[in-house]
Structures are given as structure tokens and as C-alpha cells.
Image (cartoon, rainbow, N blue to C red; front, side, top):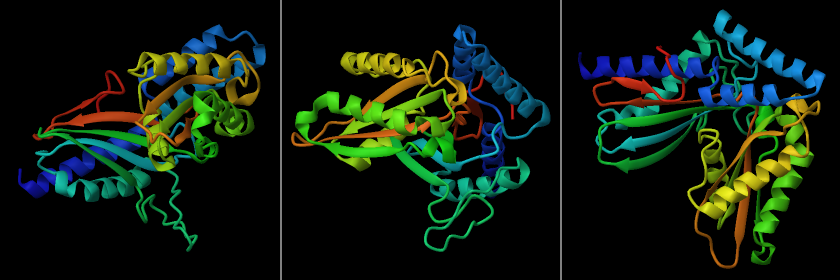
Length: 299
């Protein structure tokens, strides 16, 4: 195959994978939803969980998106500097989104700022939004696809606190946000918290936090303990599935952090709804690939 043929093959692969992510939740999310359904005691909440699983089954059977709000598409890229298609990857992903929007189909949600025009193909100014990390000098790339729906984006918040507020201030910020806005995001929720020295760093980290597999922990023992305490406390709110009350509010709480300035402590929240459309694919320089987020799946 020529280089241009390889570009077309990679575009096809990413279009297929992007479309797939809108239709099938990752394994860790499905497993957590099953666990929450099994522990639920309220009859109405059990019915809601059952409807969620019926929805997921129909999405697979009918080859249609699992949620009508297919969101704003984000790609998080961890690349080796010698991946042979790195220079073309942004254009590849833009074309992949256009193709997936038509073929999946995905509802088109990209609205141009100020012009207030829906582009009709989920692309536009900085859309899809692409985050880059060059992590080594290898020849492979790991791409995380995330679809941020309107509901799960509504609780997104960021704040810079006085240092005297401490981590207690971060906890208060998290609880205030979930109490006031969490119900808009279709619980149970995956809560991502970023803690850093400025709001833009905290916001990016909070988004990366909801890309972590459910059940993973912050590498710092104190951070991991805070994740668990927040999860326990938020579950005591009892929002339940779709906010109709129940034994759980969250799928989990993940914290990502960065060193801060002594005089500030910034925190941010990003939320994933129960239909947490996220997927990870690893592609080598020869275009062989492995799907990390979904077992026993072939595109």
C-alpha cells in the first residue's frame, strides 16, 4: 500500500471506532452499572436500571447510538514521536468525525461560537477538540475517544480558592456542584476532579480524570483515600439512576492533580453521565491495532 492508501485506511479505522463508541459503552462502565443495579433496593430505581440495560442492548442490536445526544467529540492522544502518520493525524480525525456522523449516524452538535450555526457534521472551529501528549519516541499512538453530551457537560465548573480553604474547600466545591447541578447529567455520574494551581490546568485534568478506568486510583495514597471518601459521601446523597433516588449517586470519583502555586489552589469538575461514551484504541506504525476499552470487539 502507498502512504496515501495508509492514510485512507487509518481514516476508515478511526471513523469506524468513533461511530462504535457512540453505540457501545466500555466494559468498566457496564460492569459498574451492573453492580449498582444488583445492589439497588428501590423498585422504581431497579426499573430505571433495567431500562438502561434494555437501551444498551437495543443500541447494539439495531446498530444505533446508545444516547440521542451523541455529544461533542474529543480525542485525547498519547503519541510516540515516530508514529509515521503523526503530521496527518489531526486531518485524519476531522475526516473520521465527518464520516462517522453520516454513517453511525451521530447527531450533529457542533455550533460555531458567535455565528450560532450548526455545521451539520460535528466539525468546526477546534472541533473535534484534540488533546496531544507526545510521550516517547515510539511508533505507536493511543487515542481516547470521548463524547461529551450536553447533560453531562452542564455541571462542569472550575474555581480558584484561597489556600486557606485547603482540601476541605475542594470537597465543599465538589459537593455544592453535585447537589446543585448533578441531576442534569443523568446519574449515576462519573465525577472527575482536577486539582492544580490554575483553573485551566485543573479543568483539563478533571476531563482526563473521567477517562480513567472505573476502579482505578490516584497514585498518591492521600489522593486515593480522598477519592474513596468523596465517592462514599456523594453516594449518601442518594440521587439514584436518572435522579429518581436510589442507593448510589456516582459510578466513581477520580482525581487528577498537578503541583500548585503556594498562594492558590484551583479545582475543577467534569462529569460523565451513566451512558459514558469513552473508548481507547492503540494503533501501531504498521496500522495494526488493539481496542483497550472493549474486550472481544472487532471493527
